[in-house]
Length: 610
Image 1 (tube, rainbow, N blue to C red):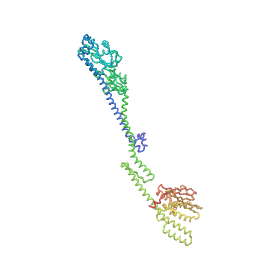
Image 2: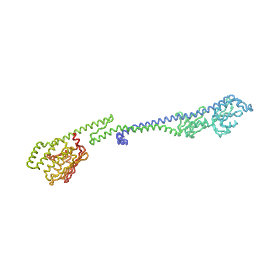
Image 3: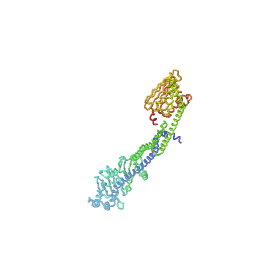
Image 4: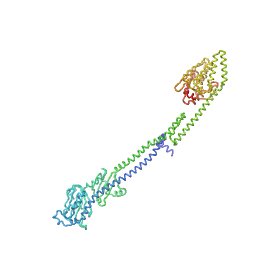
């Protein structure tokens, strides 16, 4: 399982990230699933809420249309019932027409229809009223739009409107009469929805009249247009016989035909309040009294657009959460990664030899404890290194003191003093000077036990040493000492330069018959002092140079010499004393002489304070 995880691309990418980016990556690996799940939940919830809200809205639109149409139809039904039950109207319709041939106002004088006119004046949506008597009397006619009716009931009785009313057996039948229709109206001014009804006697055995009430189609359309929300939606009002009365907006005819022929609408509408079919949401209502049905068709694209609009805000909020999480996670990652980066830099400097590192402690958590532990480790390590460094220096000083102790200073001083005065009594000044130089040499070597001496004293030691060696080699040895006065007071470890001068004389010139030349120069270079010891002697190979600098084998050097094995020790002492802040370079070749270049920092003030 672990191997499969390690072989994944995601794991390989993760391992290459920095600690800070790993923490940000981890935060997002936690946030992204939560945000994705929240987005899915929000989307589903928003979708469900939108569907429920829009379903409720469109159901109310459909119900409102049905109610407004029912309000118009109810007025028609009330007037129709008035004619059906009014005794005066019945008496007139059942009487012989011969009684009213001379009375042209027989409708007003024998029935309360004048009062009905006042009522119809209020019902402005009823445009025409026609009552065709079956007893041969002229029809009763009212019109608001100047339409002219057909007066002959025989013609009207042949129409489909009359036949449908006859089939209804006294119930109201609704139909649409277009402006071009010339059956009920000789001159129809507008499209109308008519309510037709056969009037019977009280025993309902004899037809006494045919009543036609008409409402302008514009009234119905006004109701539908008031509820239409979008231009690509459509509303259809259909009669109980399936005849289309009103159509507004964009209606899918094929879908409408399917809905009217099948019972699928009623089944699904009962379950969810609408029918989803052929890319439309369809809402339906049916008036129980009139049988008039209302279909509201809304394209699914409208709903999807509304759902999308409702999803924008949640998506923007989730996106903002995702974006705002970045600076927060970066801040958290920075606050946690910075101590680790500080610790890493301190450890890198520690590896390079800087033992003074201290990591700032900014928190009291595990990272703060880790930094505190590292600081304590650094202090302990530095204390241990300083202790071992001091011990190593003391060990080197002990070796130096052991070398100095090989000579009994008091014995030497007394002997040399006696020899000096004896040479003076014998008038041999040359020997006296050499003895005096040897005496100074040993005094400078001892230096009252001091390990740090002025450069001037080291140069005096070298001068006395060369003077004694010149006594040995006579004309075979020549030397030159050129040291700038400004560095004479700088402090230097005793026997830092002299061993290299001794090496130049003993190993470079001693075996050469013609002798040679040794030059010692000293210069100040800003915060450093540079000393160069050159000779034109027999020189050394690179192997011999490495052995002189890095080998502890002292068998190849005579212990009686002042320098002897000291070159290796001098090199090690410089490393301990100066760390990397010095340079020691030896350039030589067989029969090409040797050049020793020493560069060490100035330490006059530090030495004086010590």
